[in-house]
Length: 270
Image (cartoon, rainbow, N blue to C red):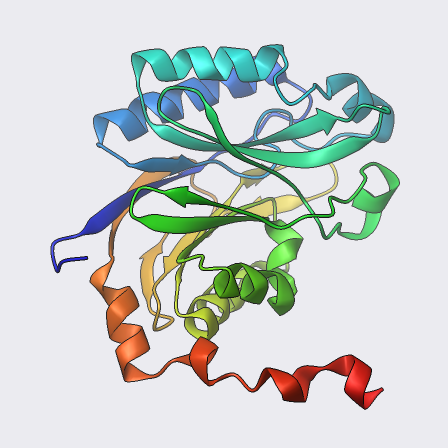
């Protein structure tokens, strides 16, 4: 890794149309075109960017298999504008269960990683099934871990991914008011305590139930904010991650190396 190494991340803070795949697919295509034009290495979209959140019956009908027709359309978009893409959608499992799923698609449309949200928030438990696996993958010169929204509020998830080598945590989200201060705080905390980059993309707009405040952000390995997006603005912004900061943080102090894991064994203390 050299001082010149960087990774360009694009966050597209979308005003998702709940239940309207065609409208959302057009917004996704526009985001792909913008990210490609700005030479992004990876584009991150909000949670459930394909469908938004609806009532259980409608969500069940909107759900698709992991390589369903909507994902095939998105993969075809990448042929014209090749960019790596993190996209979230309701996935129908083999027994009819529904997951909040995230796929990392390469610029060729191949699936590099697939994650099912492991921590469901309140009424999400009435609609979805939680995933049971944390997911990471090699991405360019880094190892990348995937998380979704409420997952960020459980430090164990980020820490496990960091211990497995993740240097960039990508978080798609549909966090609502009045909890926007929570995600900004935790993005910085998760980045600093794991000495990694955290890229967090939230949706904007409102529906009958929630107001989504946006405020997407990216933090670096010292917890520093590298990108802070506006509230309530549907837009795409890019940021270059200075990868040398990963080395600089570990040279200053090394949280992962200096952990005393034996003190944290619940089986030994309960």
